[in-house]
Image (cartoon, rainbow, N blue to C red; front, side):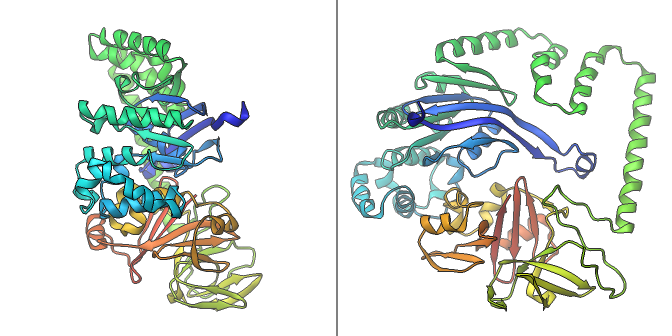
Length: 499
């Protein structure tokens, strides 16, 4: 059995951080999106997963290894191809260039040219090969990536909500790609928010309801159960019934006391008195006032907030040049100098180096147990525990260069692996203990303790970004759901860190 198992997911849970400061301070910052997802994907299996579009997008990112779950494990050593139109709608690559890069990622270089020659029979490729992907309709992008999936050598294919872009006459193209994958003994994950787009293809079925597995098993029984659920829901006659419909199932999704309190409030909605309402308002007012006072104290006392075991302290700003005790923790600096050397270690732009504050305007680089004085002009101060501007990778992608934007899923797969694994998998021009420069393209993988912690690449259209976010800092830092994006304005480069 083990030799036909392609992917195993165990207790996959994902919680996203709230953008609201108050909720993070009150330790209510995580909102469960997925809870305890377990699945096995075997060779030749077509697993249809039904759920809402947002949660299916998270499932795709986790199973493609571009997003780490909050808890749980994903076990696979197989190659994974993720097909999602949204990943390509902003690409400035031509269809021809995108196709070549797509094939190079998943095929041996020697066979790429032969495959490109065979694409002359693919209508959407021939019609648009000199056009940019961003100029194509979403339907044409969907047809293109579906056709390309037949030409690559992968073990698992994820079809992410592609049916929504296809016309009825296009369904034969999707069916052909799925049948082809099954004949090649691939595993197929078919992610769709509409069960009608799953029924013609899947041989196994999973229903995600409010982020939990509500059914897993045969397709026929699963469809019957889901349709029975829809009939029950269609019998709802008013808003009150809709709020309490399926309540027991919703309650199991979120374990936070606040969520359960809200469910109780719905039950008591019709019997709440004006006196109770006033009491609640008083309690809320007291809590908010306490938060405001505590926040003011935090600002005045310059208390450092840390984030778990990996959090680093914010060094207190003192009015004198008193030396910081040796017991204080180390901070991070992102190098802005093209060349820095400390002993045998060489650093370059956006490499990370541990720094220690010695006085108000003096820092030391901590390298191999030794300390070297550095100028504040040589680095960008970075503290993962700070409250940076909230954003997401998808929002910031339009402001990245096409070398990363068009292939970010591919390059993100190499984050948080060892340096040796990285160098075995890519072609590179230069490497040292701090970085590995990819051959032929302006992308650099950054290392810390022989682990890939980040990727740097060129930026573009940052004037629009600065205007949209009303940024005043020269080197803005954005907090992502599971990492950071740091813009070094002078060099016009991004550093993407995924935790």
